[in-house]
Length: 220
Image (cartoon, helix red, strand yellow):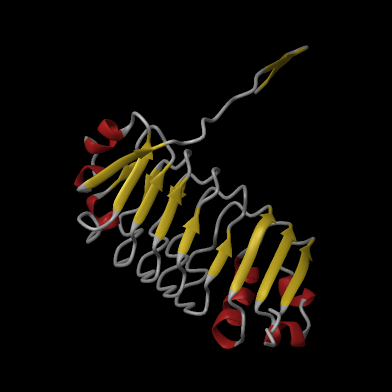
């Protein structure tokens, strides 16, 4: 059996906003998976990726090793070809409606650095699993609205993030909420989270802080 290899392109982004200049016409048209590392992606760079998703063959994006801290507003809106994305390891904000109607995106693992989820995944109808890191502070009002196939939400934080009832509208009876051991009661009595019928505890790897005393100050 002949198995066609996925067409992968590697890009070092030394200067934000230059992604289009770094890609050849052939790479734009044929790339199925793109791996970008280096500087932060900005609006212009996300626009290039969006065009490759909508008009060409791009399906998988890996921007884990970029310095990007925020996904641009509506960066991947309507990109039904997007099947998988590795988010930046130092991401703080997932971006306003950034993945709206990405209908073939199935799983999202948010980096532990993420603090804000701003209505980012509305109408991701194929999404089945979501992991929220321990630093998440807030989940926007419509962040997972109309994600009808979502089956599991894994919350790593011992303190429930700020969450509105509409954030998971339509999922409270069918989706399982997993929380850290010993935290079920906290979630069951927190706005938004208390609506889940099925809350289960699971083991979560503990986080550690390292404090070193230095001459003239402290490094944590």
